[in-house]
Image (tube, rainbow, N blue to C red; front, side):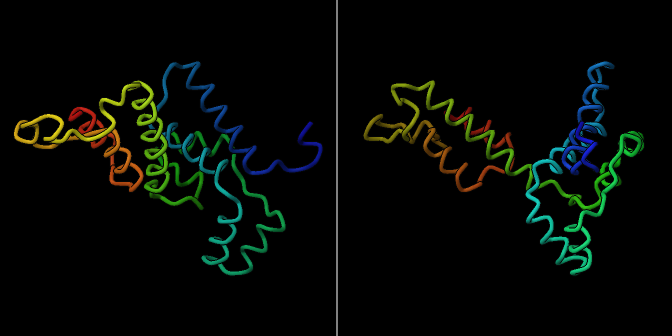
Length: 177
């Protein structure tokens, strides 16, 4: 039905590719690293704001390239390309306009995961025993026994300032509590 109106938007094509990849993975009960990279590329394509994409395209390739995209130049995505990328473990050939570095995407995902985890920690501590730092006034000699004190509030501050660079750093702080 959708094809009666012409070429599907790129996000629909990426969604179709992602659905086929995941279906094949479920049927074979195996998801390769290449397939994971392709799914990530599809997700970035689907959820990337189009205005920032067109602005970056115009700044990189000039006004003509941005005008072509705005006029609806077709971008070819196909399952054949996805299969070729899976065999080569090279998702960049499937999505050449995406950055090779996923650090910004990973940072945002880490922020979301940590925010949810910290909120869950707060919910599971109804008395607030681990919410605030322990001081020597509350527990005499605490600073002599515990070299690196930690509390949920300090972890939340670290998360808000993007001090956590990996989930392992967060795990270390949880173990300190």
